[in-house]
Length: 408
Image 1 (cartoon, rainbow, N blue to C red):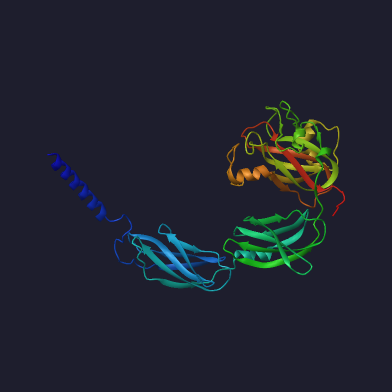
Image 2 (cartoon, rainbow, N blue to C red):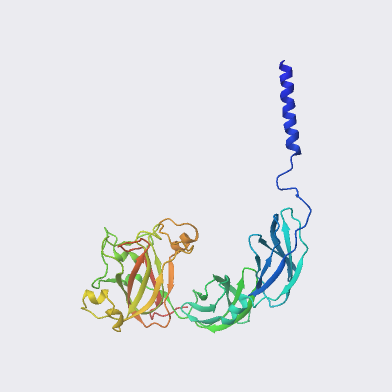
C-alpha cells in the first residue's frame, strides 16, 4: 500500500514538471508574425537642433511603440515613442542640414511595419544661437559671461586661458539652462588675461570659440575682524541665549545668530558696518548647520548699501520707505535662497544637491556698477518657516575691492 502511494505521488510530481516545462514563457515568444500598418498623415515641425514629427497610428490593439531611424555623422540613431503619444522628437543635431528619417510602427510581437521615409531640416542648434549672443566682460575675480538661451537647453560654458604661444588651456566648465545665462569665473588675479569660451551640449555639439583680453577687477574676502553691528531703530538685534549677531562673522560656519521669538512679523531688518569703504562684488550666506532650509532661516531678502547714513532718525523712518529714497542708500539686490532641487518645502535635514549647496553656502553677485559703500542693511522678507518671527543665520562673507594692494 505504501509503495502504491509513493508511486502516485511521484506520478503527480512528474506530471507537474512536464506541464511547467511545456508552458510558454510569458511575453517572450511572439504572438504572431503579422506586421502592423504603417503610419499616415505625417507632419514635421523643425526645431532647434531637431524636429517634432507628428503622425496618426492605425487603430490596432497590439501596437507597442513608434520608432524613428536616421543616420547622423555616420552613426545610426534610433528614437522610440510610446503609443500613448502621437509624436516623437529628434534632438541633438548640431548642423542645419537635411536629415532622412524612416518611421516604423512596432507591435507587441516586435513585428515592424513597412517604413515610411521622409526628410526634414533642423533649425539652428541651440549651441550656435547661444554662441551668437555670448558676451565676455570684466568682472571681480575673473571674466563675466552672459548669453541668451531661449530654448532653456542645458549647456556647458567652458573657459580657456590662451598663453603667449596661442595655446588654449582648459580651466573649468559651468552648466546652465537659464534663459538669461550669467556666469562669473572666479579666482583670477587683476592682471591681463587672454580668455576664450565655447558652448557644449549634452549631445556633444560644440560651438565656435569667442575670445577676449580682460583684466579682472580686484576683490578679496573682506576682513571680518572689522565688522560691527549697527543698531538702527527698528532693527532686530535681539539675542536668544548667547547666540548674538557677531557670530555670523566669526569665521566659524557652525556658530550662529538666533534672535528672540515674537519680535514681530516680517519684514525684519539688521545692519552691518564692514569697517572700510568698499566696492562690493558678492556675498555668501550660510545657514546654521542642519538647519539649512528651516527654522526661520531667511528665504527672501533685499540687501542695501550706503557710504554713510543720517543719524538720529526715528523708528518710523527706518521701518518705512523714507530711508530708501533720501539718497543715502542704494539697493544692491533682491535675492532668494532657493533649494537647487526646486523643492519649496521646509526641511532641516536635506540630502543630495540641496545639502551640498547649503554646506558650501549660497553666493550672490552684486552688480559692478554700484558705488563705494561701507554699510550693509538686510531686509528679511520671508523665512523658510511659514509665519516665522525670528532670524537664524550661520555665517556671512562679503567680497569686493577695499582699496588694498594686490601682491602677485
